[in-house]
Length: 335
Image 1 (tube, rainbow, N blue to C red):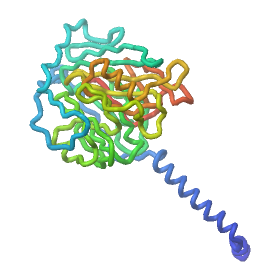
Image 2: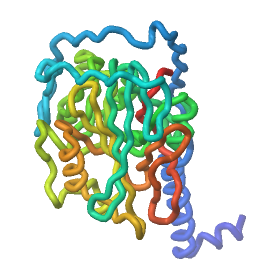
Image 3: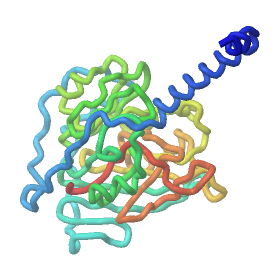
Image 4: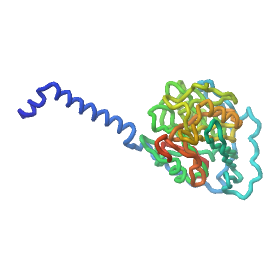
């Protein structure tokens, strides 16, 4: 006991003791926030749809609840002509650069923009129910992560891209499949809303509530951003960027040409072969492809496009080539 008292008699040793305690506390906070996984809610796998019930008739939603507008769009399906009819299908299934059946058509093309390889997936659907989302480990929670490939294969997806990596933040709405999992709006930024009629909308997140989103009939909500296009006009400047991200990055974005007609874009970046895109350049790509509305999803090392069992792009964090494990995906499929 006397030895212990003598050890702590000197101020320096007290400082070392408190320093160790603070270090351990900080380490626990980091582990709890970013490493230790915690399931909050397990998502029950949906029952497999029968061939007769895969596609149901489309009915437009009633008037949507009032939500704060932004420098973004409040489009409705009635503003457009009927969605373009799908071409007469060849035998259903995978093609050399996509997939088609009587309910959907997917075409993937590759292009070069700004010294960067960009992958564009044009999607046409008969029903918005074919556009789905999934969580890592099939559960909502903290630090639950899988690769885009793992989630896509677990849900028998036809095509998938990474989502908004909701698990990297503790704020921002998480509404998937019509269920609200997190009702904590960010104080700035915009959200992307998927409605059951196939329409997309972008609104300011602050001042919006989960109750309003549910009441408006939102099916999926993504909290990342910013918006890239609204009413066909670019909404970012050449100097805009996400947080402390580099000016040129791998990118993932989702846009709407018209309801039920979409464009998913993923770019390479941070390699000798591909520099990456700025947000403004990404918006230009989406605009040139005919989108009227477009939204930036999680990029950098998260950016992944998956199709028919293969990763289409070259995901990289700058240190290695390969998929990053993320919280969620957007995918096409019947399950």
